[in-house]
Amino acid sequence: MKFIVILNNKGGVGKTTSAVNLAAWFAKLNRRCLLVDLDPSASASIHLGFDKSEQNHGTLCDYLIEENRSLADFIYPAHEHNLFILPSEPALSEFYDEMLQDEEAEFFLERADFPDKYDIVLFDSPPNMGNLALNALAIADYVLVPVQTQYLALSGLDLTIRTIEKAQRHLNPSLKVLGYFGTHYDRRTKVAKEVYVQIVKQLKSKVFKTIISVNSKLIEAYGARQPILKYAPSARGSKEYRALAEEILKKIRL
Ligand SMILES: Nc1ncnc2c1ncn2[C@@H]1O[C@H](COP(=O)(O)OP(=O)(O)O)[C@@H](O)[C@H]1O
Ligand SMILES: [Mg+2]
Image (cartoon, rainbow, N blue to C red; front, side, top):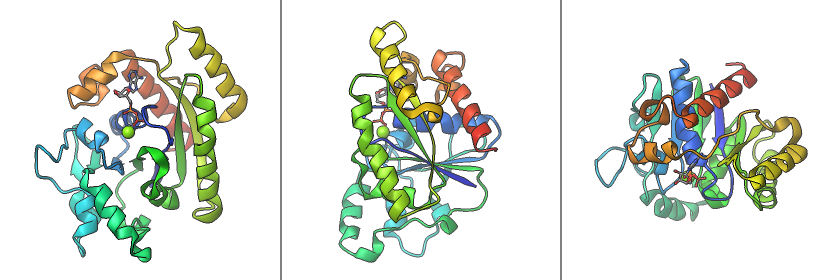
């Protein structure tokens, strides 16, 4: 089982879109994949149809509240064969803040709590790098970083890189950077090309070959509560996330 955290301290860079669509492609490519939504805004959960305001399913928050329940009780099959989700909900934020007052409760995720039947456990993380994200970094094998191909993306990236280095030093020395990939790439603009060249110059071989282009079908797929491979299988966004999923599987030898 490989644990991968999608991380970037900025909001809106494509973490959730990448988490959902990579998870769906991993599943389609015959890897059992569990998507864990660590973001109280619950966008990844909602993207896959798990909206706590509309239906009454369990969430990561319920797992924290209800002692003596196992994590498996809060995991649900989602859309694709091989795809599973541990959903989030807004109440997670408040409850976790309360929990933080009790020092021992700060780290609540253990690898051993996850049922040993997934090939990949993929975490979508909240922006602003709160302690929720640190929980995942503490137990993960890899961190995967989406980088928006726009000006200032690289200066903003420093904070993400520093967080990863801190996590490696203090929490999890075996945490590895799986890589960086460009998102929101608009090939009609010079800016996107220039920024991408800078990204490759700075991060070198850590940058995946696949770039995720701007594609409105990805936004529509969110509206339809479906992964892109189901909503618009032949869309550019679907093909690019497939290519990225394949690159990742090759890199982690799965
Ligand atoms: N490649 C893309 N092309 C067009 N829109 C995108 C793309 N990736 C993400 N989006 C849209 O951009 C917004 C932010 O993306 P999201 O994945 O939620 O970012 P984050 O999780 O980092 O905050 C969402 O409205 C999403 O639908
Ligand atoms: Mg998000």
